[in-house]
Length: 169
Image (cartoon, rainbow, N blue to C red; front, side):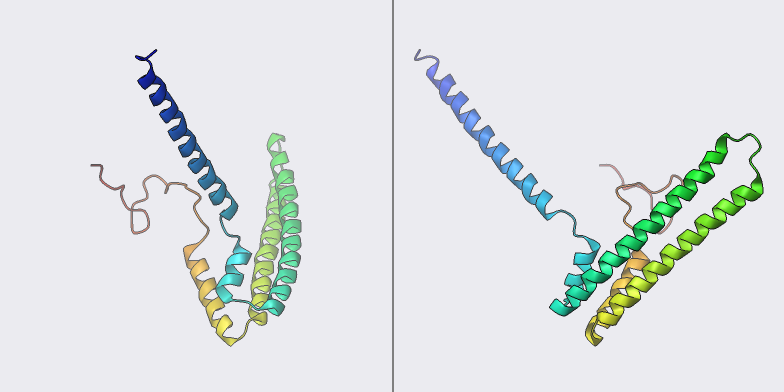
């Protein structure tokens, strides 16, 4: 029994240490999950430092904008479904396909106009200092573009924005 005592002490120590690290790891994972990525609307309101009245107006604009964008996205999806249903047709009429793609283009145009009108409405609820900050915010967003979501640059694209991979050490 005395020969096994150090083994039991080591076993208890390892269990305690593992428990501590699991607790710490799971606690950090919960914290990061609750923080999560900030939504664009909270980013805008924080960056522009809206007051309560502006926040109410902004939230109303956001709800209306989301509803319109969802409707347009559903229309685009349905129209694209109609387009790709034509794949199985052996003699698909090119004029019908052109017509469907034109409708998709019109819906995309409506989405872009809706985004512009939404930003214009946000701009109109800003005071003069906020208007300046909002213009900078929109310019930054336009120049950066959407996040890449971890995708790699296309193969063979080497240049300013797609340089060669870093050297391995």
